[in-house]
Image 1 (tube, helix red, strand yellow):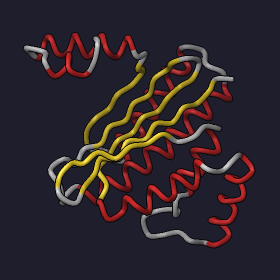
Image 2 (image 1 turned 45 degrees about the horizontal axis):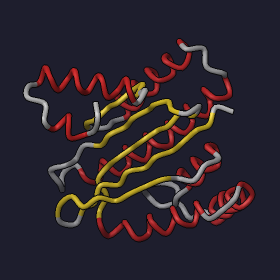
Image 3 (image 1 turned 135 degrees about the vertical axis):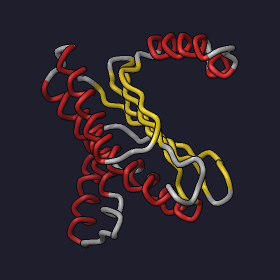
Image 4 (image 1 turned 120 degrees about the vertical axis):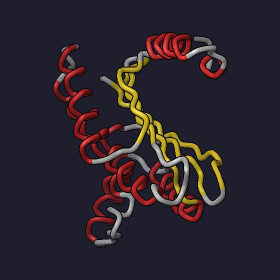
Length: 192
């Protein structure tokens, strides 16, 4: 598959599934799930990924790191998708796990209210501007401040993801429909 346009131009569902399979193989995608997220789906996705990592004999430390980051990502999707279910047509989210260049990657995408984008961008920029020690200090500060909202931990999940991956968080926001953007997040997890 040369690009996403090939998927869009597939003539039939049968062609599409073949091109999707080719794309997954070429990008070494281990798991893709698109749809509504619930606690049951979260458990199933975690279980499938854990089994795949075990089947290839992945190192225990790497498995734990990938698994912990996945939990944070999936919990974030569940929290934010629940808010959007009634309000927009594009209510589903997407989650992917793959392997490339000696690192695992986790991609997530979900709708987010436009009114929440600036705060999220500020949190992401703050996280990406910190080194390992700075992330640890920020994590401890947020925990000690007790600044936890009714929907979660005031960015604790994102801070924890950055700490565990040791990499900068890659993200984008795409316009969807009035008052909503699609938030995409990419986390890279080195194997060494």
